Amino acid sequence: MKILVAVKRVIDYNVQIRVKEDNSGVVTDNVKMSTNPPDDNAIEEAVKIKEAGKATEVVAVSIGEEKAQETVRKALAVGADRGILVKTEGVVEPLSVSKLLQKIVEKEKPDLVFMGKQAIDDDCNQTGQMLSALLNWPQATFASKIEIKDGMLEVTREIDEGLETIEINVPAIVTCDLRLNEPRYASLPNIMKAKKKPIEQLNASDLGVDISPRIEQIKVEEPPKRKAGIKVASVSELVQKLKNEAKVI
Amino acid sequence: MSVLLIAEHNNKELKPFTLNAATAASQIDNDVHAVIIGHKCEEAAKALSKLEFVKKVIQVEAAYYENFVAENFAPVIIKLAENYSHIISSANTFGKNLMPRIAAALDTSQISDITKVIAPDTFLRPIYAGNAFATVKSKDVKKCVTIRPTSFDACESTGGSASIEKAEASEEFSKTKFVKREEVKSDRPELGTARVVVSGGRGMQSGDNFKLITSLADKLNAAIGASRAAVDAGYISNDHQVGQTGKVVVPDLYIAVGISGAIQHLAGMKESKVIVAINKDGEAPIFSVADYGLEADLFEAVPQFLEELNKLNTIQK
Image (cartoon, each protein chain N blue to C red):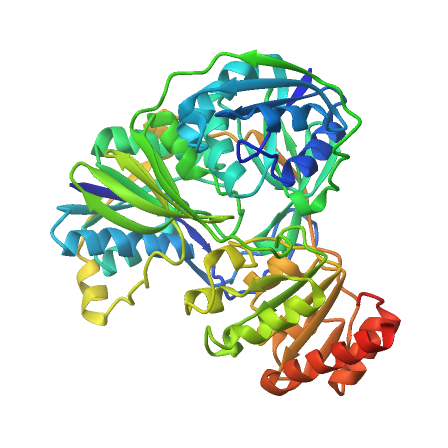
């Protein structure tokens, strides 16, 4: 079985982002970038499946600018066998990403495609579902547990009401939740080894997909600031304030 | 052209966020039609026809619609879509799972999780865990939009008298099978719509200690929330998680107990009207959004809180 894992390069989750003064977007220059956190879970799960002898190859793919190569390299350092970088400029909407991934899937013919359930930059939560629509494959979104059975997967999904279990036939798409597993850190020897693993580079235009944006970003603004609050000295003061000032209890 | 709202329900009743999505749909266009796909969902369809704003209900029935599998739902909506300019649903796990499958099939770039309708093609939406807001304009002919339910008021559940039309089911998608759903039943208010939410974090130290949160929630008739750290540690189940990848809540009162306030958690609660933080670390980021911060050991403060609330009740009686 072959697993393709899609990884995205995003502003690190610990960075307090800043909006550009001209409201055209957020500041990305000199900002720490990392792999989108649930994509780390996706890679980890694929590598674990391979280590358990249930997959033969794990291929990491990223779509983005030249520097997204670092994100692919990191996936290789934690156990992916080889990488693919589809180079693009500017904003690539989830619909375009899923069309590019569709081309990669047609070429690579994986049995499973894993990715994070949501990117923490645009917070869209679309790509996996879109890819599975384009391929007409089953989808298991928000996965917190994956069990491989004969020709199919049993997946536990985190939904608003609790947990849901579904069975999907392979080939299939799985989008991963943060609770799926505990992503490992890359060891130094593995980081060195990853430098020798191949990364195939393609241009989006080579794949014959129109990726021009359909959504115009008119402006990006900071959220309204909350009025500064106060510290209270005791529980009784807190309760008095809630009752008499805020009038919420 | 009209707007098509996708109703969320449990085959008996409508899910409350359908009412918020109806309001959002009505802000795009007056002519709101609603589609309900399910199995033996007559009652829910009737409830849908009574909603303020809903002008027509389309009911689609089949046994394989019982469990809301997106692969089965999407073809129904794709077929109906030719008559509509917009497809709308809530940006909860139901809508998040379903809408992109529809959008991709319609070759539409979806707009997720909007908090405001600025014009029928222009919307406001949070990005970067709500640390920025983007105004975006769709250039697609058909628009697929999910709405953040807590950003729109629920519409009235009475007053409407829409006709109910039946439409044909689509073919079953046989490669996905529903197995089971484990729902946590509770008599408490629902987290997404509760007036008061009491949340616990890593500071609770154990699942057992969450009893303190439960007692406080009981006293205040509140829903129970949690930070990701508390859910990851197994103190409480995932359906309680508040934050960027969990639920977004906007209660009148949010009480954060033993929660440090990572930006991912703040993303889910910082629009609450009044925020209380109880934390022994005075430097915790949660205090930056709290209206009332109490720097204290939660294991002393919460029992005192309960006592004070008891006193208050006695006075009121």
